[in-house]
Length: 183
Image (spheres, rainbow, N blue to C red):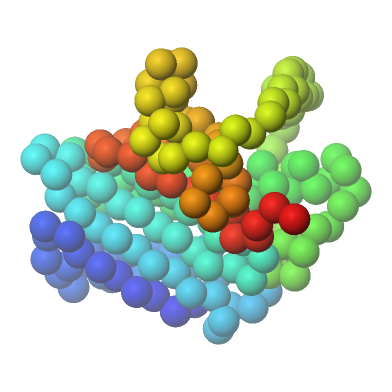
C-alpha cells in the first residue's frame, strides 16, 4: 500500500507516521492489489480532540473512516476498526446476495470475516420520490433549513445537474453534484 500522511495543525512525527503505517500494514492481507492501493491519512488537532481521517482508494470505490478522540493513537485504532467494519458489512451484503460486485477485484473477501447482522436492519423501510425543482443553491439551503433536514436534493438551475446540499460536520455547507447531466 502506498501511504500519504498529512498533518493539519500538528506535525507528523516519526512515531505518528510509523504507528499509522504499522496499523494499516495489518490491513494489507485484505487487498489483492497491494502495490496499487493508495491510502491517504490526514491527522489534525482541534482544541482537545485529535482527528484521524483515513481514505483507502480502491479501483471501484474508496473506503473512508473519520474518528475524533482525545488520544491520537486511540483515534488511529478506532479508524482502523471502522474500516474493517465497513469491509465486514460489504462482505455480508455480498454473501447474502451472492453477488461479488466489482469491489471483489480489489478486496480479498476470503480474509474478511462475515458480520452477523440482524436482517431487519438492512431492509429498506421507506422509499420516497419527488419532482426535483430547478433552483439555486441558496434556495436549496433555505428549503433544507425549513425542513430541518441535514441534506436536500434539488436540480441545479444553472447547469441542470442533480445536486445535494448538506450540512458539514465542521460547519458550513457542502454540495454533491452528479457529473452526468439530465438528458
